[in-house]
Amino acid sequence: MGSLSIWHWILVLAVGLLLFGGRGKISDLMGDFAKGIKSFKKGLADDDVADSSPKSEPLKTIDHQQQGAPAATATETRKAG
Image (cartoon, rainbow, N blue to C red; front, side):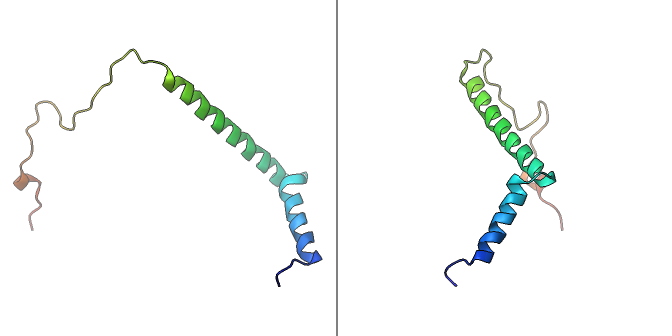
């Protein structure tokens, strides 16, 4: 049981040929998948270049409360019942 027989190797080669080598929808899908990965890596590399440039605008902060709204007390936030 430790070694693979000739039938195992034929099955592995047939699946590999079907996925990566044959002319069909699955091989086209694998090619599109590879193009997507390359585009993703290129996009990440472009983002790294853009992040390294100095920014002219100061960083903005977001307040967690709206202006002019009173802060809720502990009794108002607690549900009754």
